[in-house]
Structure formats: C-alpha cells, structure tokens
Length: 117
Image (cartoon, rainbow, N blue to C red):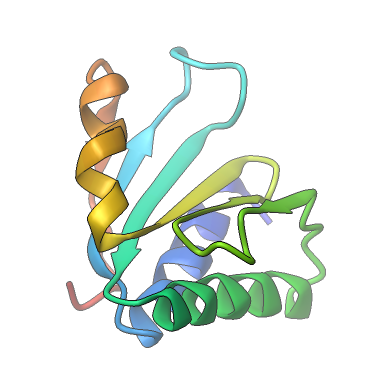
C-alpha cells in the first residue's frame, strides 16, 4: 500500500471514530521519519483510545505493519507508526500545547478528500 493510500486509510478510520480537526502534512523532503503525518484529536481519553485502536485495526486488516504504538494507556498523545505514515492522536487538551502543525510549518497540508471533516 502506497503512502497516500495508507494516509487515506488512517484518516477514514479516524473519521469513523469522530476524530476532530484532522490535518495531514506532507513530510516528504522535510523529514526522513515518514512521508506523511496525520494529526487529529478526540474529546476524551476513551475516544482518543478508540481512534487509535481503529486505525491500528484497519491497518492490520490491510496487512500493514504497525511498527509502534506509543502513549495508549495515558491517551493524551498516541503515536501510531505505520511506516510511511505516522499518526498523532491527541486529547483535545494536549493538541494546542504541542502544536505539531506549527512545529512542522514547512510541510504542506494534504487534502483529505475521503473524510467528512
């Protein structure tokens, strides 16, 4: 699965669990970590966990390796490493503090056509 397809898969999974303020950043040429970052938030710890759990499940259903999942128990900032795509699921209270969109301000945003947000 190509990076853009994996990004759409993760974005759709997040959208299904009502993730808010989804932003996709094109990291190609900016970072060696991944091609894309997907950033979103939930309104409660349980919602943040549900979003992360569904992204992991959908990726595994497509036989995509989940290289790492960090922060699940605290559910303030869950990082899901899918290789070409790294997903950051924040609790709404944490997202503004870390402000990854500003930190990676050189990255262009990717239009997420298939999500409803």
